[in-house]
Image (cartoon, rainbow, N blue to C red; front, side, top):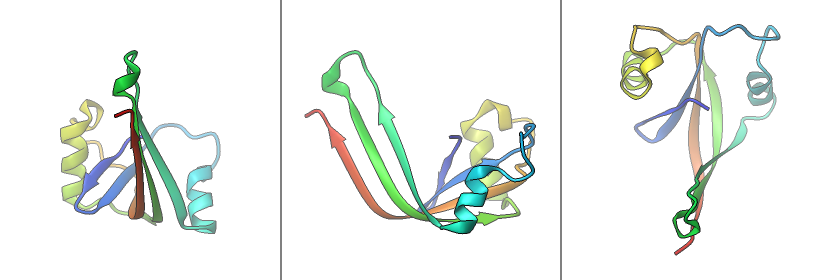
Length: 103
């Protein structure tokens, strides 16, 4: 998942790549039930460096990308550095964080 953190939200773009259907399954799922979970892990051959964070959240689909989100995407991902603007955004507002580390 491509994402940036803007303020207290996680924002994931829906970009121009060819899609297999008219509406992405993740968009249909959010429209049906706004509760989402995002899991980010850190893998390392040295298992003492393993970690993950799970974000329980509410999500909404936003049809426009505000300039600060586009700037954040451009800064984080080289593919967005050429002025590409997403078709829409998934805005994820965390409600609960859970995490684990080896130590």
